[in-house]
Length: 286
Image (cartoon, rainbow, N blue to C red):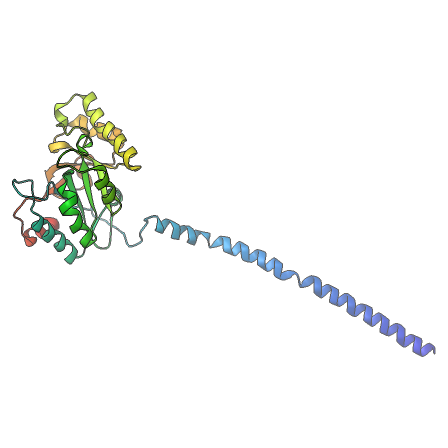
């Protein structure tokens, strides 16, 4: 009987020890929660990658290449897409020019991208160009716009504030539609007066006033101004910068370079009668 009791006591002790061991293992079984917490920490470590993706989505295209030598930016200058004088390029010629750009692998830049090219000395991996129109004629919408859409090209129109909705000039509705399809509207001042003939106060009104108008009208940051008739003086350069523009273009011929001054960039005037081949030589700087 004693022996039976002894066996029962030993069995009870062993059972008790087994229960304690199971309890301990059960407690250790909560360690995966600790791993999950570590996993959360690792997930936080991947955030920089996510941030990089977000930055990339905001336009930080990794295909842009840093340059050692100063970059040059071909800025094309058009006015009316019609015929009649040296500032008017017929629709058929304009279409041939745009086809040449597309066929030769050019991408078209926005004002923001153009500023990036010159200010950071980087450029897209493709060949690039900035297309501009001065004055904002109606035929920019009726003739040029369909061609730009056909080839998937961007462009910038320098609009005169007081000409909006006037005969032969763009309307609000037309500009809104163009903006929705990759066209930028930038400043050509309020009244299209030769700035170098104005007082400092008048220049400031033309430059600052038009920027404020286009900023508010299109809910944008107006980055560029085109000086009417290409006229400017030292005061103009200072006032344009103080008004908040990042770049200003003139009618001085050639490719734009930062060394010219961001407020006095050159452009390539496109005149009527240019064949696609001659047009291409101008763009490429030959």
